[in-house]
Image (cartoon, rainbow, N blue to C red; front, side, top):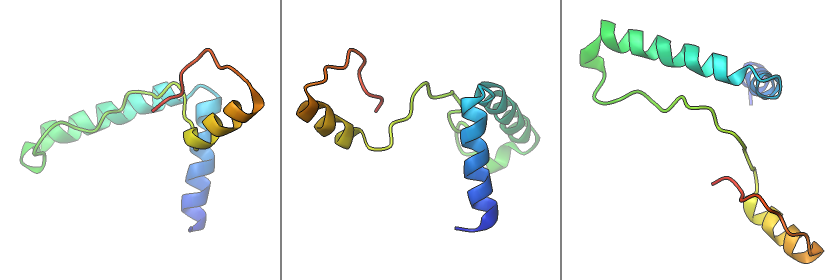
Length: 80
């Protein structure tokens, strides 16, 4: 992984934790919409989904195994 990629990943995590992700994703959505309006021939369909994700789970299957072994009952479903 390059330094730039590592820094970007770390930066995005920090921005999500700081609650800045919604604003950043809205700005990206607007930028893509403007690009699509300027060059419609380059776009075959809709732009990507820039909706913020409420919760991210890296290993949902592992969490389920740990909870089952510990007897922990979680009241919230895991994100897909």
